[in-house]
Length: 60
Image (cartoon, rainbow, N blue to C red; front, side, top):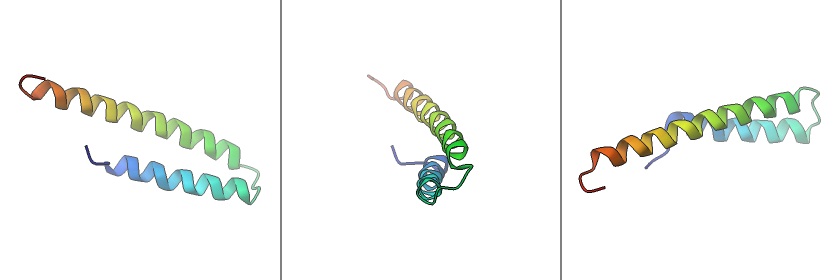
């Protein structure tokens, strides 16, 4: 199953979070928690897509 736009956005957000932490910006850890929440939402979406895809396939 290919990555959707939200999955790609999550990856970019993680890269930005890492840069913010490296440069020691004061809101970096708050931003990281935001990205973790986005990542969890993205994971739920992938799981739901997987379940729906497998329900449609005969013999699965």
